[in-house]
Length: 125
Image: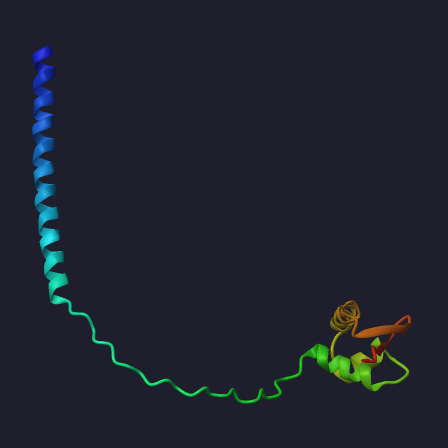
């Protein structure tokens, strides 16, 4: 029984040593190929580039107005204040969109409430 055990162990060890020899050969081949690749690769020659002059950015073009900007211009134009119905009529937006814009701009401090449902723009300065 012990001899059978020793025999299987020796067979296993021989198989492992064969595999290791194969792996050693493969790594040697890879190392040789890598060495050839490094030798054939030449370093690129860097050419000096002239310093470019500082280019100025073109002035920003007035992009499309956001929906919030549209509502704010209407509110800022009115002296007595604007209600949501008038904003809906002038902009064509729905009630929910108008309310969201009014809430956001009120929180940002861009408008104030004159009375319930009537809004006026905040004066700068």
